Length: 336
Image 1 (cartoon, rainbow, N blue to C red):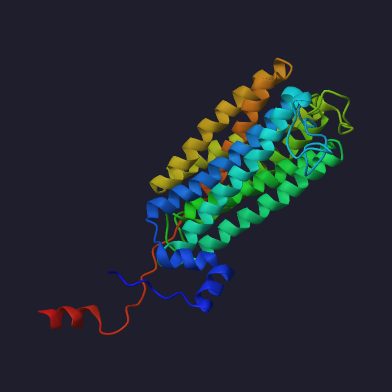
Image 2: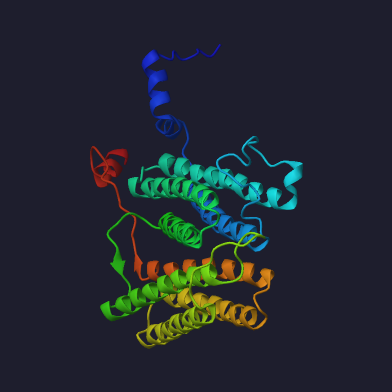
């Protein structure tokens, strides 16, 4: 008979106070599992943006007219609320799926051996961004889809994608001191690219706030700006990002840069071309909902692509832990 281990009151209290430590003590995920967990959180952070766009583009932004309940008397959608209620409530439920994905990433990172504090912190940063954005989403509903709060909601989602991208990258490298793979001028050029992409996303939210897709079937306040002018500014910034990406690829080829920065830059250039085609087609076809939704997905992919270019400019080697006791040579000699 296998003896049953005694569980003391102190052990039980420790498990309640720090369940992650309890899981980590009993489970060691493979590096592949940790990478998949981080990738799942990144994928869900993109999915929640796209489905949020679907809520707006179908006019379902106030399908649930209040928050945190769906109606004053019901936590969930009702049959009387129809299609719009289902869409809005379904998007709210996806927040729990996102939380589950982020939670899995945190648990996997906390349980990895050796323990990597920086990786766990990136997971927790995603959790708190999700919580903050959930509250902000509720405020968006309570203020009747005010375009400024909608813009802030999207920008916070972009911050979530950024952190999730960094965590995914960090699961595939060590914790050593970063070693640059390119020179200072190239690094500065990429930071200009990141800045231009950030401005592109920010102006994109203004295009949305001033544009015709208000998110609800009734009259909703729009930003008091000329939509055509803002759209042209958005296009100029897009061309700046494309030009910087092409110039970066040319410079990396000229300095015989390593494979990783070149590959990431090439991938970003392809994404930008596809996004540009979608952007111009939707502009000249008066913003059909399907293309606007596809453009939102492209925006997320562009942002991820830019960040991956930045992260590819350096490498982090594995940190070799010091082994306690006799050295490896002494151990081998003793065994011999």
